[in-house]
Amino acid sequence: GYFRGAITTAPIYNPEYKLGDSLNYLQNHEGFIFNSWDYGSDLSLFQKNKYFIDTRNIIFTDKVFQDYRAIVRKPEFSQELMKSYQIRYFLIGLKEPFLLSWLASNSSCHLILREDNAHLFDCAPSAYLD
Image (cartoon, rainbow, N blue to C red):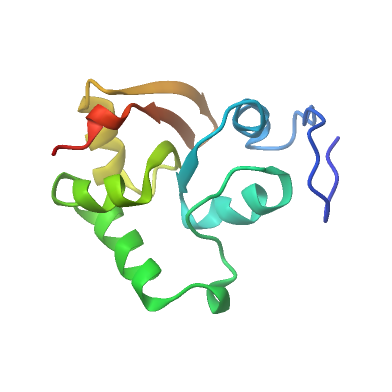
Protein backbone atom coordinates (compact mmCIF):
# COMPACT_ATOMS: atom_id res chain seq x y z
CA GLY A 1 0.00 0.00 0.00
CA TYR A 2 0.93 3.63 0.24
CA PHE A 3 0.85 6.26 2.94
CA ARG A 4 -1.29 9.38 2.57
CA GLY A 5 0.05 12.58 4.04
CA ALA A 6 3.67 11.50 4.45
CA ILE A 7 6.62 11.25 2.13
CA THR A 8 7.79 7.67 1.97
CA THR A 9 10.50 5.78 0.16
CA ALA A 10 8.64 2.49 0.53
CA PRO A 11 7.52 0.95 -2.76
CA ILE A 12 3.93 1.58 -3.74
CA TYR A 13 2.64 -1.89 -4.53
CA ASN A 14 -1.09 -1.27 -4.62
CA PRO A 15 -2.15 -2.63 -8.05
CA GLU A 16 -5.21 -0.37 -7.98
CA TYR A 17 -2.98 2.71 -7.88
CA LYS A 18 -2.62 4.15 -11.38
CA LEU A 19 0.88 5.63 -10.98
CA GLY A 20 2.51 3.02 -8.76
CA ASP A 21 5.30 1.95 -11.12
CA SER A 22 6.10 5.53 -12.17
CA LEU A 23 6.23 6.74 -8.58
CA ASN A 24 8.43 3.80 -7.58
CA TYR A 25 10.81 4.59 -10.45
CA LEU A 26 10.98 8.30 -9.62
CA GLN A 27 11.67 7.63 -5.95
CA ASN A 28 14.94 5.99 -6.98
CA HIS A 29 16.02 8.59 -9.56
CA GLU A 30 16.77 12.28 -9.14
CA GLY A 31 15.65 15.11 -11.37
CA PHE A 32 13.01 17.76 -11.87
CA ILE A 33 9.65 16.36 -13.05
CA PHE A 34 7.30 18.07 -15.48
CA ASN A 35 3.93 16.51 -14.78
CA SER A 36 0.32 16.57 -15.86
CA TRP A 37 -1.81 18.77 -13.67
CA ASP A 38 -3.75 15.85 -12.20
CA TYR A 39 -0.62 13.85 -11.28
CA GLY A 40 0.85 16.58 -9.09
CA SER A 41 -1.02 15.64 -5.94
CA ASP A 42 0.34 12.09 -6.20
CA LEU A 43 3.86 13.42 -6.65
CA SER A 44 3.46 15.76 -3.68
CA LEU A 45 2.80 12.80 -1.39
CA PHE A 46 5.51 10.43 -2.53
CA GLN A 47 8.40 12.24 -4.12
CA LYS A 48 11.64 13.73 -2.94
CA ASN A 49 12.06 15.28 -6.40
CA LYS A 50 10.68 18.67 -7.31
CA TYR A 51 7.72 18.57 -9.65
CA PHE A 52 6.09 21.22 -11.80
CA ILE A 53 2.46 21.69 -10.77
CA ASP A 54 -0.50 20.22 -8.92
CA THR A 55 -4.14 20.96 -8.28
CA ARG A 56 -3.42 23.23 -5.32
CA ASN A 57 -3.54 26.21 -7.64
CA ILE A 58 -3.34 28.80 -4.86
CA ILE A 59 0.36 28.08 -4.29
CA PHE A 60 1.50 28.58 -7.89
CA THR A 61 2.14 31.88 -9.62
CA ASP A 62 0.58 33.00 -12.89
CA LYS A 63 3.96 32.52 -14.54
CA VAL A 64 3.98 28.83 -13.60
CA PHE A 65 0.54 28.41 -15.19
CA GLN A 66 1.64 30.27 -18.32
CA ASP A 67 4.78 28.16 -18.59
CA TYR A 68 2.78 24.96 -18.04
CA ARG A 69 0.33 25.86 -20.81
CA ALA A 70 3.14 26.83 -23.19
CA ILE A 71 5.02 23.56 -22.67
CA VAL A 72 1.89 21.41 -22.96
CA ARG A 73 0.42 23.18 -25.99
CA LYS A 74 3.53 24.11 -28.00
CA PRO A 75 6.50 22.08 -26.80
CA GLU A 76 8.45 22.65 -30.01
CA PHE A 77 8.52 26.40 -29.18
CA SER A 78 9.04 25.95 -25.42
CA GLN A 79 12.42 24.30 -25.28
CA GLU A 80 14.07 27.32 -23.64
CA LEU A 81 11.46 27.08 -20.86
CA MET A 82 12.12 23.37 -20.43
CA LYS A 83 15.84 24.04 -20.28
CA SER A 84 15.40 26.87 -17.74
CA TYR A 85 13.48 24.53 -15.41
CA GLN A 86 16.09 21.79 -15.95
CA ILE A 87 13.36 19.24 -16.59
CA ARG A 88 14.65 15.67 -16.52
CA TYR A 89 11.44 13.63 -16.38
CA PHE A 90 8.02 14.07 -17.93
CA LEU A 91 5.08 12.29 -16.29
CA ILE A 92 2.17 13.06 -18.57
CA GLY A 93 -1.15 11.66 -19.69
CA LEU A 94 -3.14 11.44 -22.87
CA LYS A 95 -4.64 14.89 -22.22
CA GLU A 96 -1.36 16.39 -23.46
CA PRO A 97 -1.22 15.04 -27.05
CA PHE A 98 1.13 17.73 -28.42
CA LEU A 99 3.68 17.23 -25.67
CA LEU A 100 3.33 13.45 -25.85
CA SER A 101 3.99 13.53 -29.60
CA TRP A 102 6.99 15.84 -29.18
CA LEU A 103 8.52 13.60 -26.50
CA ALA A 104 7.94 10.44 -28.55
CA SER A 105 9.67 11.96 -31.59
CA ASN A 106 12.63 13.45 -29.68
CA SER A 107 15.65 11.15 -29.88
CA SER A 108 16.99 12.51 -26.56
CA CYS A 109 13.83 11.49 -24.70
CA HIS A 110 13.13 7.88 -23.85
CA LEU A 111 9.87 6.31 -22.75
CA ILE A 112 10.57 4.56 -19.48
CA LEU A 113 7.10 3.45 -18.41
CA ARG A 114 3.55 3.49 -19.66
CA GLU A 115 0.74 2.66 -17.28
CA ASP A 116 -2.96 3.33 -17.72
CA ASN A 117 -2.97 6.84 -19.18
CA ALA A 118 0.42 7.87 -17.77
CA HIS A 119 3.66 8.05 -19.73
CA LEU A 120 7.03 8.56 -18.03
CA PHE A 121 9.86 9.92 -20.19
CA ASP A 122 13.49 10.56 -19.29
CA CYS A 123 15.01 13.40 -21.33
CA ALA A 124 18.70 14.16 -21.59
CA PRO A 125 19.72 17.84 -21.53
CA SER A 126 20.39 17.56 -25.28
CA ALA A 127 16.62 17.31 -25.81
CA TYR A 128 16.41 21.08 -25.56
CA LEU A 129 17.90 23.10 -28.37
CA ASP A 130 20.56 25.67 -27.54
